[in-house]
Length: 231
Ligand code: E4P
Image 1: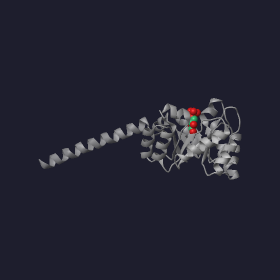
Image 2: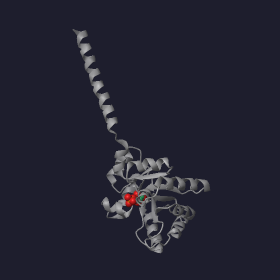
Image 3: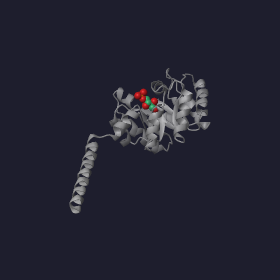
Image 4: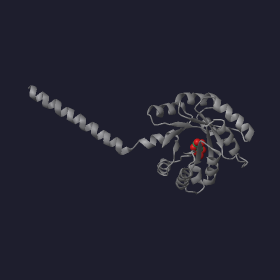
C-alpha cells in the first residue's frame, strides 16, 4: 500500500519525504488555495521537482470536456511525474470518461477524481484511468459505508484484471486511514496533520521517558561504584 500526502504545503511534503514514508502527493484547487499555492503552475512544478520520480496529482479547473483535455495536456507538460486529475463527471453531471480515455491513450497518467460510488469506479476502470479516487469522507458524509465500498472496488478490479489503482482520499479521522488500509486500498492520500497523529502515542512517549530515566539512574550508580573503587 502506498501513502500519498494530500497537500500542497512544500515544507510538510519535504518533512515527510525525509522520513521515507511518502510515495506521492495529491492536490486539488481547494488544497492549493488553503496552502497558498495561488500560482498553480509554480507550486505544482515545485512539488513535482521535490518528490520526483514519485507522482503528484494536479486537477483541471474547467467544466468543458474539450477545454479539460487541453488543460490536462498543459498540466502534464509541466513535469514528467504530474498525474492529471479529471473529475468523474463535471458539475452538470456530464461524464468526463472520454477525456480520461483520450489522455490515457496519449500516455498521460490520469487520476479520475471525486468518485463516490461503486459504479463510477467500474466505468473509470473501463475508461482506463490510472488511478481512481474514492472520497471516503464524503461517502461517509452521506451516510454510506466507505470501507465496504473500498473493499468492493478493490476486489472487483482484481477479479476482472483492471490495472486502475484505488486512491482513498477525503480523510477526516485517523481511523479512516486504518479502515481504508484494512479494506485493501492501493493508496491512501493523507493530509499532513493526520500523519503526526498516526505516529504519536502518549504511552510510547511515557515508555521512552521511563527508559531514559532508568539509563540515567544506571549511569549514576556506575559512577558511584567507580568512585568507591578508587577510594
Ligand atoms: C484527494 O485527492 C482529494 O482531493 C481530497 O482528499 C478531497 O478531500 P475533501 O473531501 O476533504 O475535500
